[in-house]
Length: 132
Image (cartoon, rainbow, N blue to C red; front, top):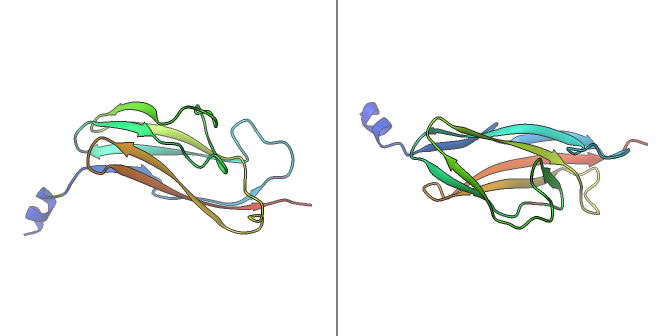
């Protein structure tokens, strides 16, 4: 019976890491080119058909993505992701909203696909601080 369940599994399209906790992010001083906190995340098509990916408008109030302008024309076509392939994103924290300092902020990065799943979501958390 276990083998039958494995045979019914759908495509495995996922972010690694599955969520991104950047901890305390110090916004003191001039912002580095890639943001105050940066991380590399992979979207991998482990098993499944080739997906066509697109990036809808993301949380530009808080995030910056390397290679994608804040004021760009969205959605952006990211091309195809074949089985066994990976798309890597450089994710940075560049801003926060008034009232969010010293509070954990939750946001996300969503990638749309032309298949199932139709969306792949990366939860992102950070706490903006300023050292005195």
